[in-house]
Length: 438
Image (cartoon, rainbow, N blue to C red; front, side, top):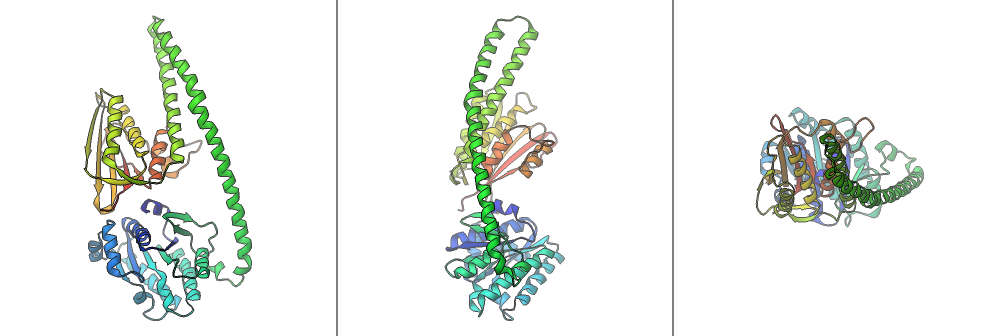
């Protein structure tokens, strides 16, 4: 879940729906962990779960609960003690969060986030009205302060009416392990307005139409990709093989060095296009990849290393592995590592070409990290920016399909593609994957 929260920003309001404790606390841990690494002070409000159970689960998922509590970065408290100590007035509850955010900022934190189990509201009369008013009013607080909230709803404990109202008032929803941006989020002032119920039907109908339009556009795009992929895989590749074959015959029949260099240039260009067509085929695979599953990272990366060593026998490839590392990923990670190693060797400034690979765990963040480095120019900033933005423009585009292929494979695994700073004249690229808890 953690990489998915990269799209959540201060002021956003998230709700998670669950029926079992394990996914509930996994989502909460990812939300809290993301806030900690963003320099925010975090508060977890327990109600249905015991505080000890929350702490134990967070530790198991890689959060340094004890150290963070000692520093004041993380607090785990009773929701009833925080929200219901002076009654159930939503204004007073918002004052609690306002004071907590102010305190965080005064202590040099970049913001404040809270993850709360909302079953506390079941202990009060008129629970639904009070809770929905509180949720809606929270949006106004988040508009002016760097505050984020993850509201947790056990679908077996709340009524259908309450859950439906909650859906209106949250910008993001986490359901079955996926962070979804709401198509029909309603701001607080509109939801609390007396006329909201009269407009909600028309709003939902409009959103239903927009979703249907988007679905048709996606289907059309997939059809076009299928055709383009077929052309790249068969027609163009077959024609290029003819060009390569004739170029090889032509080279053997000419004597002039200039003519041979021109034929070599034709061959090199054709081979690059064949390689690009092969990458396009892998891209098509990543679009229909299976969900991430447990993967022996050492074995998977080891196969990629042996493939590259066979392809570049004169190059030096140093690989270092941490044993018994199990990550959550798809088998396509092997292709991504091959791509990074290929680039590292081809762009190495050493003679013979040399690349280094390291696989290990980052214990305090519960991730598996694959580092690839070589002596040479770093990945251009323009290429990094294109990957960060997720789109290309006529004035700014990446240098090819290679890094896009790596990015999409890593995204499918809920991982992160990084470009760490290296020494002068060093290029470094890293992949981080979720780690299976011990």
